[in-house]
Image 1 (tube, rainbow, N blue to C red):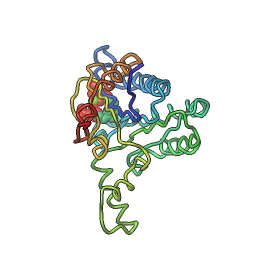
Image 2 (image 1 turned 180 degrees about the vertical axis):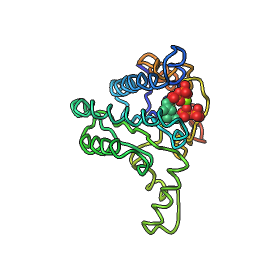
Image 3 (image 1 turned 135 degrees about the vertical axis):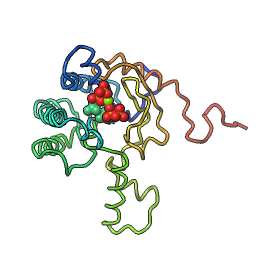
Length: 237
Ligand code: IPE
Ligand code: IPE
Ligand code: MG
């Protein structure tokens, strides 16, 4: 058991396409397998009592992909929600979404809203799924919502209230990105200011409990300073 656990873990689930290509399979098979890895990550977060998990499922830039792949991903999400809603309720998994809602196919959006509504009182773990999500887009939408609500002067606290993650959710303590890429790809820009970053070569469909545990162990050894001094550096006299 790691000595210090994060309260909020964010994950860029990358490498589904490469996982499939290495097996001579179509990319969509990688996405289907990626769903199982997401499921394992949710179970592991729950097991360790990590209250918030945020999963990057589809970015505002992922619309650039071939139409067939985009359609498959939207249908995969819908089917996953439909098949798992009862289990989420049974296991106390609250599911919420961040990102734009104006471009999601209607049948997928209906399931997203239904799952949000019906898991509202679940409290073992909260999973935020980022769909049609981009960090820049989120900040611009937040600013526009703030103006519409009559705000006339921005502070960090004012703007934060209009972002997609509810204000009570702490910034991610740990960001995991799989598949060897070392970039943020427009994820959670506002909130990542002091997040610890963890990169692994493992492709997302191969990411399991053991790999999650490695990331948690690594995190527990990090010395966080937030621009100040670490606890053991503070003067005691
Ligand atoms: C991540 O896997 C899933 C989504 C972005 C939807 P990719 O599809 O990006 O996999 P690679 O990067 O091509 O291997
Ligand atoms: C980031 O992965 C988005 C998701 C995991 C949903 P990408 O595969 O889209 O990112 P880039 O294009 O490699 O930066
Ligand atoms: Mg990728």
